[in-house]
Length: 304
Image (cartoon, rainbow, N blue to C red; front, side):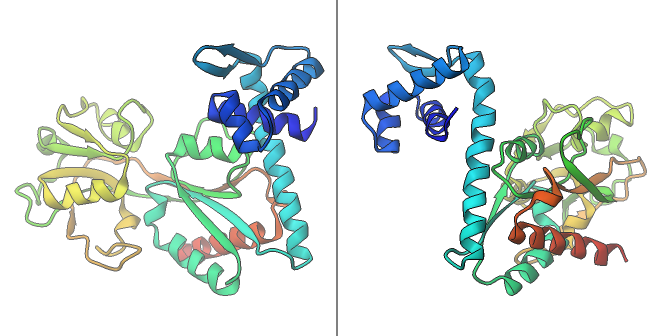
């Protein structure tokens, strides 16, 4: 297998057609088709299916796609690291965060400190759902991630659990139920969930499952955290969230008041396991290793 073959496979998958793939790769359609056929010959399996609707990958092609992406990303990062050492390019590092960890003050502090020490670096921050974030890590699209979900299986990743933060139930200031002390009192109100309702392991679903309660019937599923907070501030909704994300009732990034109230519910609420994750800390690029260290240090200071 050659890099140009793997690149062609990824491009065909992403564009869905030979014509568009050839335009992206700056090759003729016949050259791209020939490259794919050479790859199929090398592996001895059919990798693409051709139809009037375009081109899609076979099951074998889908399996190879994961390794192709990882290989191409590893090569790209290796070249960038060498160019960086020669002073030919600014370092690039990509951080993945979840909607919850994007609000944490420790993450903001780490990024501010990192940028101060590496002003020429190209820092990218991508917000993703926890499951998608981990897949991006496996595909090599992220260097480091700060996640708020601890999956059942962490095999194949360098996983550092930093802390477990308490969950809280919040409503806007002035809410009619601002003094409610039980989930049962709140059960019939409107709720906002920043997790997909189909995710049975989400903090929202476990809030009710762990307390032998049915999930509320009136729920807005909103995985966009900023919009969820806006709904929370401007409606009579309630939401389960990480208490530390409130940052003393101020937005962790803008410093503006959130105008939210934590309810004194007596039921036990699920915690948010905040973890620092990468594929292998010992194989991080120099700049990614520095970012990891800043994130780790900020969390350590917060725990002290």
